Image (cartoon, rainbow over all chains, first blue to last red):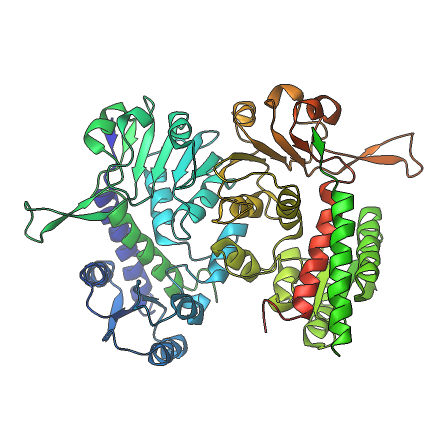
Length: 293
Length: 293
């Protein structure tokens, strides 16, 4: 069994990005600039955004954090987005989700200029990625693809089972894994809460990606010997053992599943760090105008 | 075994559309208007476009056919598209594919205003459909979904195997079949030319959709008793028995597969007529501004 060390890979990629940024700057260009809009004070969102800002520093990017209280109106938020769309000094920006209930998330996402949409959530980026055109890829699927690539996990002609059909993980990942490329060229099955054959599908899988958000959903009896398992789950489970009072828990019953696997990602330290790195990669692509002019 | 009569369903739907159009006109609105651009004189394209124009007549739509020789330049074609984009009397339009090699098809597709893109090929429509937002759906997948609905074929919790990963059939259909809706909520597997387990996957399928373009690819030994089979293949195979010198041949070995099936579509007369009807539905939606204002 080989542990897929997302933390180590993410550090390596950030180093590679920092080198590219140093080259850009040495050639007289400015460093890429990522802006983030954070609404309210949700603990999870605060942590995610803080980690993104920190990663920008490591990559040599400029970053700007724009904060709003959770009483912000939709109009105010749309104005801030419009400002960032028009600001030539900003290459890409994100609006940290979730947003307060009185704000229409989809409207916010679609208000972002797709050429600055480094989260890859705008329909144009989703559509272009689906067709196989250059696009900002959604961070988690792109991070998983990069882990498979860096660990040389074979996908061609293999059966991949993706558990979960979300717009930001399951569906775009399935799409990437079936394209004519490596990592890709796989037979891809998507199962979800309404599927009646999850166990059978998993037992026939060479690779299982678990993105359901149910702690310890994938148990050892659902995994065949030699399978690779990617755990996307990051549920905050209350814990008396940590200072924060919770611990991040994956969708995989790691202790019992790991011994059967060829490859497996831990939680934390697997897919999580790669998600932020994908955002950094998109920001680099935005800064160098590699996808859109 | 029940034969899914796509021709009969398509006639029924055209009747329903014509009734809606009559109502629109009775309320003082004008009838929807579809324009089609046809480049060159390819036999297949000529037939498809002629059938679309004919269907417009049956539905009570206005239609306009714009012809170019295959010597047309990309710039000339882009100008024609720009004209149609700006023409308020045109609700939707299509550019019949394939185009001559000197023209960039993707550029042409993206030049079409997505609000008039009744083929559903523009990245915005692809992305919106993928996310589950209202959009012009690609005609063939939408037609298949409609056939499943009209014949009450159960999809919820069933295993659907889609053979083929094309941008216009396999991928968007897989996406529709996994959404939280009926027809949908299925476990969906996409297999393709690089898959090594097509037979095993098909043998576990409740529904098989064959969209590979290989005549008689799906044989009886790949289908389990009681499965529903949807044949998207329409390969023109030379024939001495027809006046045209060819006959349309499906991807399914119909004679041997049909006896095992709960439902099966014939070729011709199955999915084919539904594809044109989907285009008519999109044109109606465009004409009534039901998706975009």
